[in-house]
Image 1: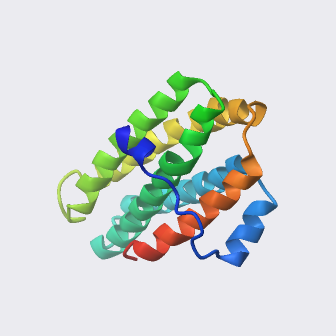
Image 2: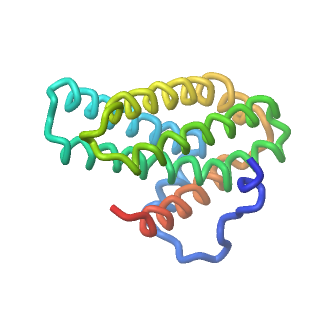
Length: 175
């Protein structure tokens, strides 16, 4: 995706000490896996609400939380992690696929955000987004991340950059 290469994390931005300190004790793949686990949990919660035919407002609030989290997560991967993986010569096909998967997910996110929870196919679209994300996560965690760990990537430094950028984006995104 062309925009991923144009965007870069802001250097010298105000640091969030807690996020930076946490990130410095881990690596980028662990930080991204935490996001994966968190969003998977939210999708399970959504599925329970949909199965229980919960109030539309409650389902929509959770769907918007999922959409925000995925949008921020995709942005930090595209701005920081994927370019670093490309620079480290991690398998290009995997990175290309990941960016195409992000584009598909973003399209579905935009559809969900423009809908009402009472619209036909709303729950189905959230479910399909979850399936897309699950597939994407399996490829990242099973194939891409192990290759990144073997490559000459500064995963601790990347974790700090990812955490800082994520904090910035979460502050910008509507709650």
